[in-house]
Length: 73
Image 1 (cartoon, one colour):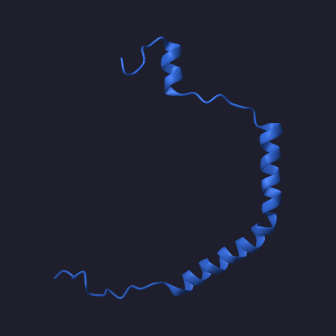
Image 2: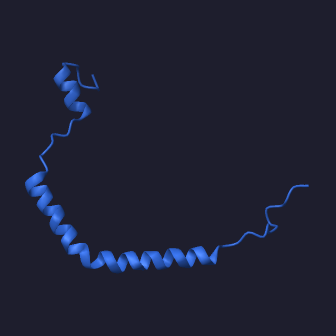
Image 3: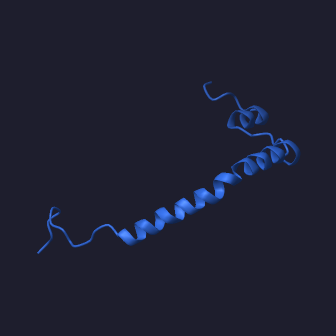
């Protein structure tokens, strides 16, 4: 006999794992929040000095360079 959707199967929220998840998230926030200005500064310096400005290729550029007509024609 099948179990009706409205009947409980005995499974419920796992409180211990939920508390563990919240504690770990709080620890990560406490550790990473003071590091946020350092991370932002490192990201800006990376963009300015290291990251080469790559040309983003698009489908329109490919069609134009290959000599194909534009897509509405």
